[in-house]
Image (tube, rainbow, N blue to C red; front, side, top):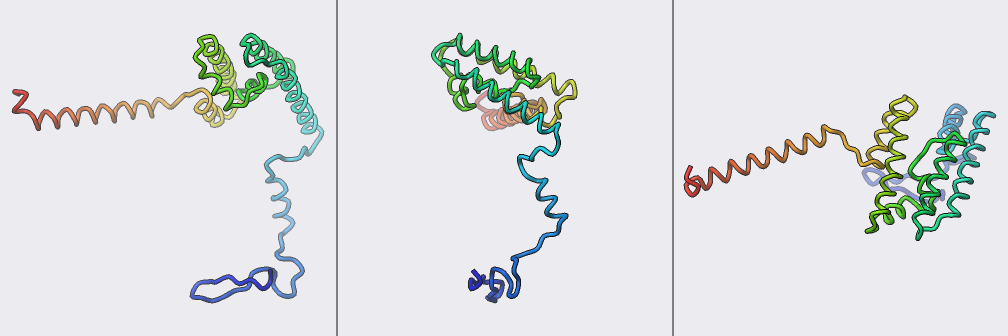
Length: 197
């Protein structure tokens, strides 16, 4: 490691690795280490309240998997039952309704649920619509009641509910109208002798 070289600007070479005489490759202040410990993706519970929440969440997830064990993908009534049981579980445990957990309660991943939802069966499509609408209504109410950051709510609405900003739709319509108007004007001008204007 200490004998490797890196070519620097203008052809100069510099040794990589630990400088001579040092026992450690680099030093980090205690403040930087403390910050690094806080920046983990899944923070460790720091107090009893956080430990209790983690425990409740783990229990809730395990109960979702218990519901999923009864799911039969060939029987839509089985899936309906799993979904209703999931909603009741959320009510009992005090957890929010969410798409991925609802799909898991029916023993689907996100991709599997979307693939299954494309079946050419009106009953399947109606049920899929019910599941998505239920999750969307729950999410919308969380945002409206100030219990969910609007930025996260918008993200979910765009990715799960298929909603878009009106300004984007209006802009797209205006651009299409402008293109159509330009094209019509251009053709009229080019072929005015043929149309008889």
